[in-house]
Image 1 (tube, helix red, strand yellow):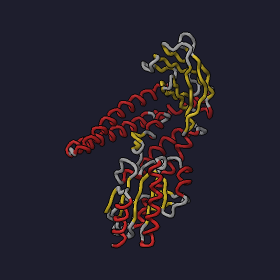
Image 2 (cartoon, helix red, strand yellow):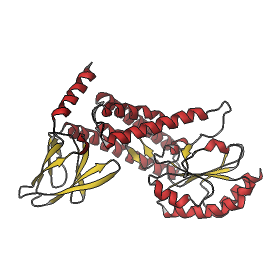
Image 3 (tube, helix red, strand yellow):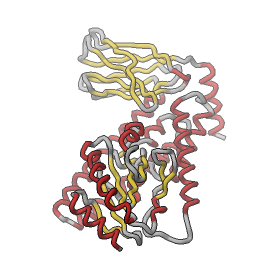
Image 4 (tube, helix red, strand yellow):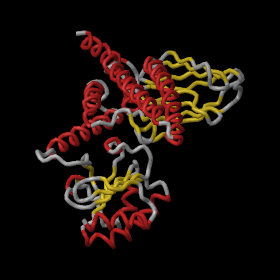
Amino acid sequence: MKKLLYLAAVLAFCACSSDKASLKLKIDGAANKDVLLSVLNVNKVDVVDTLKTDAAGKASIKIDLPYQSPNFYYLDYNGIRVASLLLAPGDRAKVELDSNGRSLKISGSKESELLQGVDQAIAKSQKSFDSLSVQLIACNETGDVESVKRLRLELGKLYVAQKQAAVKHLVKNPYSFTNLRNLYRQFNENFPLFSELTDGVYYRQLADSLQTIYPNSPYVAALDKEAVSLFNEMELSYRMKDVNQISFPNIALADNNAQIRNLTDLSGKPFILLFWNPEDNTQKMFNAELEKIYSQFSGRGLEIYSVCVGTDKAYWNSIVNRFPWINVCDSKAASLVSYNVTKLPAMFIFNKAGEIVGKDIFDNKGLVKAVSSVCQE
């Protein structure tokens, strides 16, 4: 009943509010300075305007909010992001801070105030994650097995706690755009907070809630698309399960011809599983070496399942369309979890029995030897 009353209040507010928001800014010690105002357009940041502060460090602007819905805005001063805002129709936001970007105070925008709390919690946990990661790398290098186990456990606890906090925030604030900040959060480029196929339920929950209020928002459209994609992948995953168990986790992703390719289809064959990032020139050039090896051993049954971990699918496609093996793209990096991949590139060599017999062999001589061995079995 409370949710219904809240929804009714929000709808009533949206019906009478304008499609504009006002922003007043004050930066102590920043007289006659430029402050960049930008907006997040779903997956890219565009400049809106450059605000000029007066002698007291003040500036103001009225912002037309497209789609009559909340939008993410950012303030940058001296090349540094000093404030993240989530402005909704009718907001009269006030932002106050010092010239070093500290002592940030936001008022007049409920979503922005809520976003500030989310950002602060994320920054705190990210600091802990980065510290534990540095310690883990150091202990791995020194061979301190017990410390490695302890640090992995602590990282796992941190991940679980952050995911629980994000879900709690979603339940408590079901109609807030601040949930997008949590759903798309990443600890690093290979470690998103929500990456499991079953997480589609959270994307679906938020999309359904926001669509009732902001049906024209591109953020909501993107969220709905993500929810559909995750549910489709989950359904496909269930369909692919067979009574005959295999010894390696499946990956089911679309290739550069938009066809779903299952790693399990290679069961019974020797194959290479490669995870890589096309933005790294070294990794990109490795494909040329791999092409020589594939040409040498494909006639003896060798297959390659290449997983690009990147978001620019057009660029990826321009690189891999010449390669004759299976090329798929995992923009969410979800497949990395199944194989405990923490850095790129990563390679696994499987024999016909589906067993991993080689890992991260990137020198040509060693790779030829390993591939030759599995193709002779």
